[in-house]
Length: 82
Image (tube, rainbow, N blue to C red):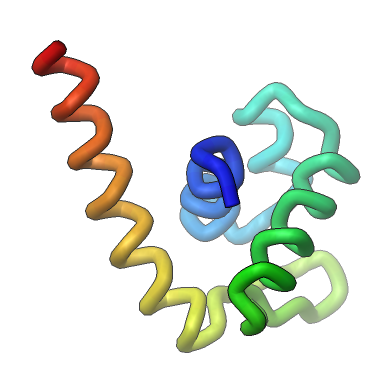
């Protein structure tokens, strides 16, 4: 897991669409999908449920998003502080 994957996850969770999130993140959609698959494999849970092109956060995804949001805020505060 790396910081980029967490930022990617946060964006996909907010937008609920891989292609649109990839555009915002300036990466390819396959790269974004691959990163999310790796994150899910590392955590051992599904973060998104997929229905065609639509995605929604799973319950585990919602829980993880709360922690990711909090962690990224704390990291940003640290960056601002130094």
